[in-house]
Image (cartoon, rainbow, N blue to C red):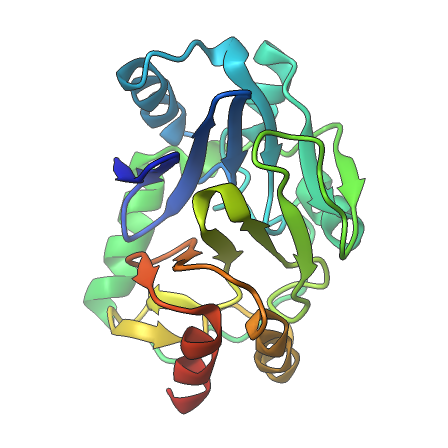
Length: 235
């Protein structure tokens, strides 16, 4: 789905990833669930781009609902997969600490896990080979994505600022739709390793010049990153 010039979303408010369509090629942010592979191919076809135009995939972190088709893309199309060094092991193995689920309601929780099953969430292949990045890196990819360290949800969680799209991609640094309660609006994301650290990391967004704040779960947010960070704290 096209959101704005250069900017497309794959998936939906339950699980989302993003595609940047730029003259020099395509950059992907996150890879959703394995079944979103078909969504990727459909979106590329709709904009007249072959799979070979994808230059790189940047993961906001290494959780299974963000790395879905990453290994397939790497293996079949030779696309490099970038992830923060602190989450490289998680992306390669799926190993992560157990975190409290927190608040949940039966209907939304069932809907989230049902959607994940429909999109082959139990068949996630972890990423055998990744390119490690760190805070402040400017990647040599279409749009020149800038890596912003956002530890908390996971040790290597990042936001990705792409000035060419006037957007910052925040992964699970925050959410606009809580997958376990169904509550909409900006708020902290569930399944967070270190909730207080995640809130502190929101300060990293305050000076980012962007009009789109794009989470991995929930509707896109139109407004400044500083405003969305303040709204999460208020929530």
